[in-house]
Image 1 (cartoon, rainbow, N blue to C red):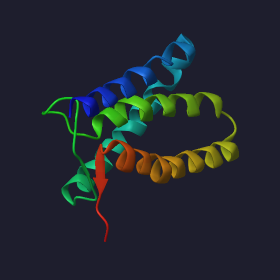
Image 2 (image 1 turned 180 degrees about the vertical axis):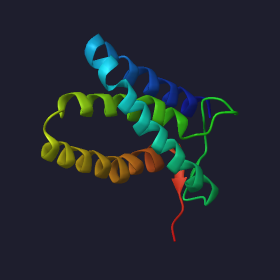
Image 3 (image 1 turned 30 degrees about the horizontal axis):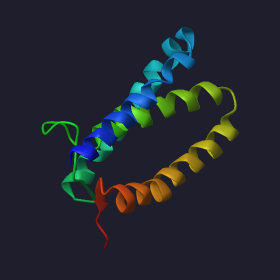
Length: 124
């Protein structure tokens, strides 16, 4: 359990370590959109957790839901990077966004479920 918590904490910290590369101006510019994106993700995770579409078996703290480290860690920073580098290129943004969601939904989930046992998905 401690190893899983450490993995979640390292994942959050490493992703936030790339924020200085974004730049102060871009940070201010894309912060509201990134917060909005992550808020929508958290709102979508609430009914998913209630319906047990996926279950997080570990969290950084007992009072924090298991999806929060993913949302405020790599998902938040990745939304910054995608918004910054795809600004003004809507078609390319749609392609990159689709590919990143597919990578997260399938290989990323498999890596966490099979190799790290951080959470499991409900199979119907």
